[in-house]
Image (cartoon, rainbow, N blue to C red; front, top):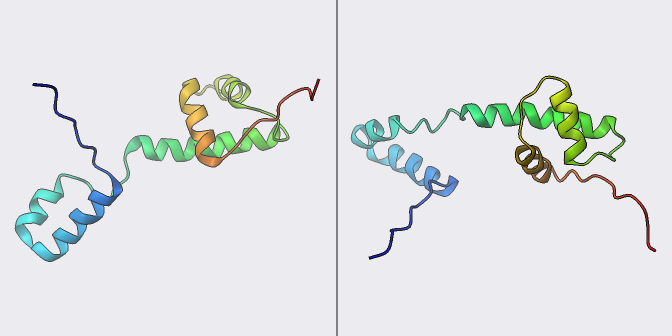
Length: 104
């Protein structure tokens, strides 16, 4: 037998659980208490702060900077952050650096 696929807990599931808690009363409320539905994770909070710094660096660079230069800016400022995380947050905000050169 193969491995079972693991289901992820998406926002849709979260909404269903909240609705069940509202309808179901105490027993479901006790189960849902451990899920921390209202409180965002530490990584989500840190991503929000980092997104502001990325947007500021992108604007200071006259919207020319891509993820490699922004990564250098952040690391130069003392932030420990990975290349992939910066690229992911830039994609999420739809920030794109300009390309050099032109048609040949």
